Length: 280
Image (tube, rainbow, N blue to C red; front, side, top):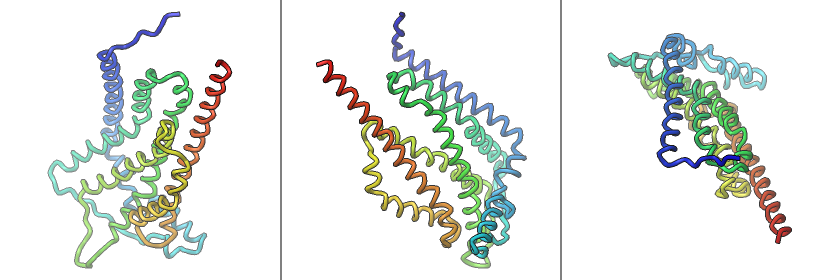
């Protein structure tokens, strides 16, 4: 049986370069496709949360009717005026939006390329315990993107569009501000939902335990409620709950993931200790 040839530092750099090239190429291709359909993307995706007929507003209104809180959960009609005040504004936003769309669509392939570079450096046991990492990261990323797009974006846009300190002031948003707000929330949630994955690896290296997370659960709940109150469009409890519950559920999932990994880790250590005692 031939031993696997050890790679030099330059070989690793060359290998990394090709993974980066492939990832950039995937994002570039998806961005070009996004740029071709940029008008459709703006009308049906980016600007959609600024309209009262967006699915989230309809779902909230239906929920309000079911729980008897129609007045609180049914959003009142509003209008969002998006303006362009820079000559190159629309063109630059087309490029920026196309890049973001390309990044989101190509994310599974990009992460797979990163994982393909890291995986050969792991031990066989580490590879086995990390099986399904690409699937888990991809699933959580898109789940966060959907949460940011269907929950945070419409609520934030509705709040900012209807908030007034004086009737003499008219809300008219610059296209750069609007797009950066939506994109920031969508991508931010996509990254935020990687929290269980981060907890898994921190538990794996011994930097975090489920006991620690349970100990500070009350602090986490307070932080979640404060964060939800900041980003929700109104102070009614139903709207606050719509944002806070998914975030709290994400925290509890992370505790569960940490507990499973810690149990597996301790079982492995006990097995190795028992094997050492038998051989000694």
